[in-house]
Length: 376
Image (cartoon, rainbow, N blue to C red; front, side, top):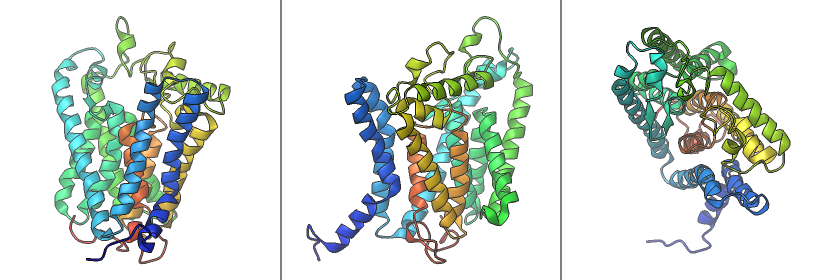
């Protein structure tokens, strides 16, 4: 058997290609910034380490994915998409289960919608955070269903998962992404059947959540205990989210070069109602905690995904990068996604699958099939 020496040209070339990946460089820039903050700002090490971990994990995803794709890129691409779909279904089932368990607490109660919503939690975050991740799951299962009809059950599951999270914002983002892809046509480049299915899922989720708002009473909580409701007139309501975004922008303006340190936004918003440890907006959060450097990383990652996706030929990778990426990034402007484990790992996977040339026979990870190569 042939052994690769320490200076094997093929291995060296592969390592250089991985090391030059802009996505990897951007993700590794975050731990570097954290070290600078730790040295200059004297921020707590434990807090910094916890806040940096999601970005380090994303860097690992890029490295592992690029290395595994060097052998059987066709099978690897198929497995990544299947993993996103399966993870989305699993997360959706978790959310649906917690919703059903919590449902009796809201039936017939004032502001029951919020009583139920606050109880819907998952290992990857609360209701709104999980809903943001599920948007990519919806797109992935739609793409898988084009080659295997059994995955339509996955589409139904992930859509119901969004409904179970009672996240009106995520459902509207999904609907908007699908409609923009439909109206944009050749400009966006997503295939019309996929865009229609995504828009349909978004519409169904929006209508279902609106219906639950009527049944469970979505009137704003008031009186004693209202401050504990995360989606009432305080907490993460529309007005309060605006205050959090404004606070994040103000903190970023006061500390433009290094921010207040990763994980430090909560200390700057203690006077605002909880949940106040996140600005509920990617750029405001990144700017507050890492100044211009971290905000630039956040913006560059989104732009990189859009550029990579737009260069891919028509097919499932382009659809996933553009529609799934737009949904994930779009929802990140409304809620807590930036800097969370699930969102950063998922964004890294999307960036990984969007790697490829613009030629007609080469797609992400070097796979050229315009649609799924076989049944996934």
